[in-house]
Length: 140
Image 1 (tube, rainbow, N blue to C red):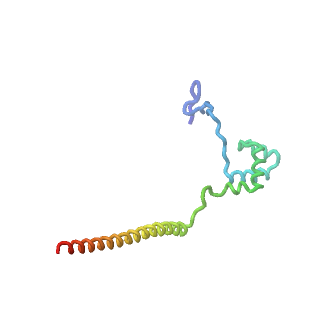
Image 2: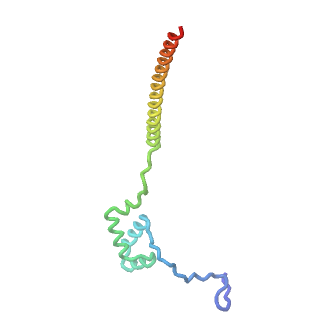
Image 3: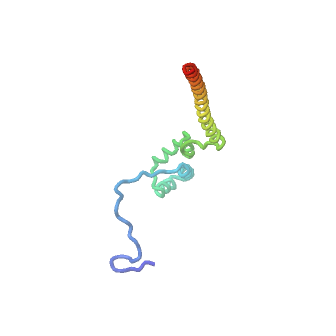
């Protein structure tokens, strides 16, 4: 309960008279636009003016929203933004394909290493045999 005192009312906060530095543009959801258009279309001339004053709208907004509705833009705005959801199975298939490609690359490298090791082993055996044959013939 407010208590009247000299110079004002105690217990009641006065609104801040400061004007924001910069005005913000209002945004309206697609559902709000459709509801307002439906209500506006059902009213008479006096009721339409009352609706516009109550909601703080201009008739030009109503005209623009009608155009959007007629062109299907409001319905498009109501859809979820961003990329469409990917099915869990599709995501798992994609992950497994990437892993498969990575593992195939590692397998290819491992086969090349085994091939090089085999050639190196054969070369070392050949060198060892050639060295033993040349060492054995000169000392005897």
